[in-house]
Structure formats: structure tokens, C-alpha cells
Image (tube, rainbow, N blue to C red; front, side, top):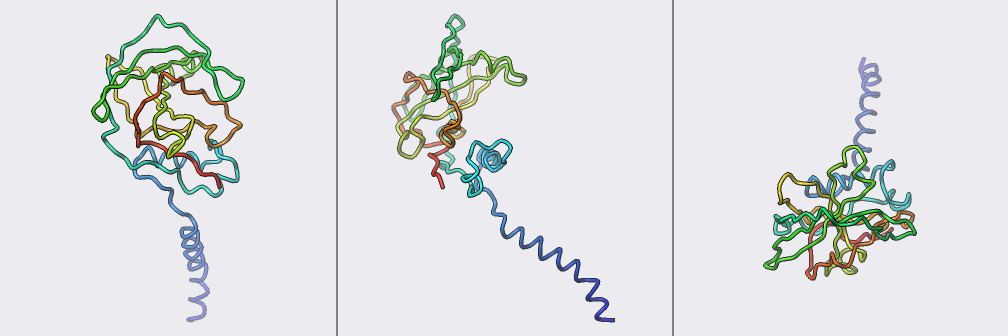
Length: 206
């Protein structure tokens, strides 16, 4: 009787052991905020990740500056409706047709700064991105803790003349992970003479 009972229990025990073993091997992705966790999950997903196969297989999570609410600022948006479209240079021969949608003014760490925010001619035609704004910037951490080519922030056209910039959501262009991507080069006028210790850090290849 005992032998028959053990034979019946064996399949269940094996399932539990296999599940436990898989759980042990599967390490949770790093991230202390929803943005960080979502970005890490995206980079681990083979269908959308910009990483090379080699880097993705060894990927455990991006490196981030520690979240700091100091780097969440309210900015005034001065729209520039008469600006011309221009070809923004990229890391390849491709150009991105953009225009300066407006100028963002904000106070950060005791000083006032300005950044141009851009609108892409092709992007605004995509479903779900009609109100998308592109904020690329350079700062004093580039080439040290953060990617040398600068970082990007995604924004949306606000209803009024103000919006929130969260530098904790600053991310690297895809070419920082894989040279096969074509990434817009941050215009020099969007250089912040300050250390922005927030957002994604430089990527270390495996």
C-alpha cells in the first residue's frame, strides 16, 4: 500500500522539484521603479530588445542612477510654431526630419536651464504617437557614468504651457547597445552644464 501511494505521489513531487529548480535559475530583473522594471523586461525580451544575442543572454538588468525626486522638474514650454523642418544627423547616413516644437525652461539644482524639444515628421504620423515629443540632452556625466553620446527622454504635447520632465526616465539610444541601430545625434544646443545623476547609466558589454 505504501509503495502504491509513493508511486502516485512521485509525479507531483517531480513537478514541484522542477518548478523549484526553474525558479532558482530564473533571477529577477533589477529595478526599483516601474520605469526601470519595464525597461529591463523589454531588454530581456528577444522580440524587442536592442541587445546583441550574446549580451541579451547574459543580461540581468541595466545600471541606473539611484532614483532621485530632485530630478523631476516642472518646465515651462514656449512653443515655436514657425520653426522649419530640418534633417537631424544620426549615427549612420540616415537623417531624421525634425523641427523644434518648443523651448523648455526649468530650474534644476538651483539653476535655470533651457532645452529644445523636438517633433519628428514621421513619428507624428504613427498611430499613438501623434503628440509625441523627443527630448535629447547631453550633460556632464556623459563619457563617465553615462553614455558618451547623451540620452533621451520621451514626452507628450501638454494641454497647457507646462509639463513635467523626469530625468529618472532618461534612457540611452539603441546604438549604445548595438551599432547596427541608427540613432539621432543630440544637438549641441541641448547640452546641460551640470551632472544629471539620474536615469540609465552607460552599458557594459559582456
